[in-house]
Image (cartoon, rainbow, N blue to C red; front, side, top):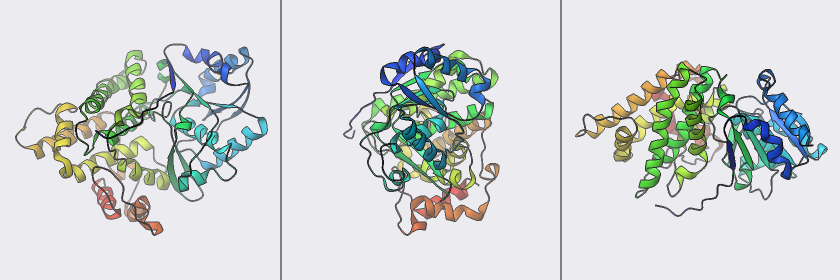
Length: 392
């Protein structure tokens, strides 16, 4: 087990009607908030009115900025930073899923920076201070409600970068599983693939003597695999949503990666798909993850055999590790198929024309500086291209 420094201060307020308490929860921390959200769904559902009433009942002033889209855009972040400065906002309240939360965090980190907030994503500049962020979660997937991470797309350059800092962990996150009841099946499936990938990126490691976090990863994955199909049958299954919602938080709050070398190659490869083709992040991960597994498993076959046994429930062919691993990957693909997720690049609407370009951008080779990605196996751009081709 590697050295680690664990710090997870995000407060999670879970359960029925918790969104009605948002004004009371944030009142000690703010006098004026930026209410940040996506499209019109929170207004159609009545959640917008509930939130505004709670703010006003607690004498909290607010300004609002809607318009967040999947793969959130830098241009809206710039607009939010300007609005916060002009209106003397002292807290950002994001109502939505990972995109709204990531956009809120980007605004929060940009308010105190004199330059363009993109500098921090592009150059990895440290931040010393950010506005506090509070969350009402409407889509469990990204785990951004408890993480210090944010991902933003720069529509002018076609780049999609992530950034992480302890200063970006939300102050308070409200999670009422009832708010997830109206999600369409494709968003349920994409969210499940995203949270599973957050676990895979931590689980598949060359670090040894990590039995505790191995077990935590495996239990969280089994919980997702067991409960997610129930939501396709009954999207108002409160108990299944409670399991999935909390699993998404645990998947990305940092706990599962403590003391482990992590990978993150699949996320890096998928960000290129999202940047170039604007595909749903979870859908892209569902296509790339099995292809990555097929490409790298021989570099640590024991780890993948453990996955097949402990997560996917493979119990036959134990004398043949390679057959065991391949069956485990096949069962993962079958699970994705049951969830209605795409299986190939073609299903994502991606042809061969930009595969090499995306592979080279993924590792920086395109820009003249190759930086191999991944932890379990270091991948150059040719490796990334091979994985893209495996996923066709």
